[in-house]
Length: 345
Image: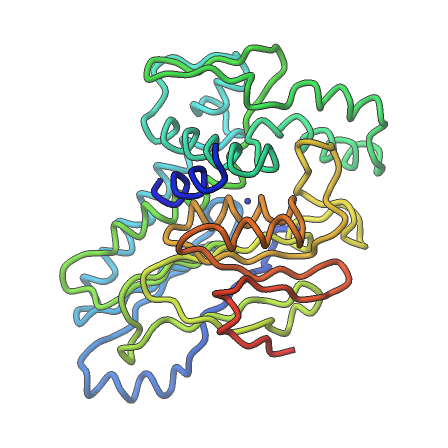
């Protein structure tokens, strides 16, 4: 990754359930009136994938071709979801987590793992795909007893966390310690969105947009020949948006304490600091714009863990990356590049 290499040289050496962090903005009535003149149409379809609602939109002159393209994109999403699910019996990730070794791993898994380890290094361990034992501990503790796990349980889970315990090459992935497991939840959805976007970049397509809950990727232009306009949700006001952004060829992802939470006050949620074993207590949400959804996905999670000072500093260092962060006190902090967007509330 060019941005990763550039920064490493500079520094010397990221409750799902109907909640969408971003929303496409536009007047359908106005768009439809323009359609007659431009001879384009907007075809959209929404399906449940990857634990959320995924909407694929394609702008094309031929509705039937657009629908075929959308079907192909959903087929690719299904194929990749079957590789990265850690709960579906028999998937490569399920086998790895169960056996501690995976022979002949899929090339897509190696690609995502390599990228994840780059983010791990870049963030000094704030993003770590071996965090799964901690995430599962919290989830199981609340599900079974309705309370936080004990300090001893957290310490035991922490002993299984650390990307240095992964050995891999083209032929196999191996865990050094029994009980280790991987979760690609903070990066795989973005990667899958990226691959689906490649499907919709076909001849005749004016533009396309994939909305996968907290991850969105756009290509080309909307019906009006403009960049796609998206709204970033406010983390404490579901009916309001934090700001509007314009996106043409790139991606945006949001990580927030409100997306999958274990306590009603959002103090304990699905994102756990892999270094400390607790949910970050300083940040409500982070949205990151990057060239790919995988980068935006991982960096939004990492920045939420790092917090306002370290997280925003990191984003400012990354070429082509920008972001906005909301603290637990609802203070809004933006990177230098993101400052061109006005916060609405």
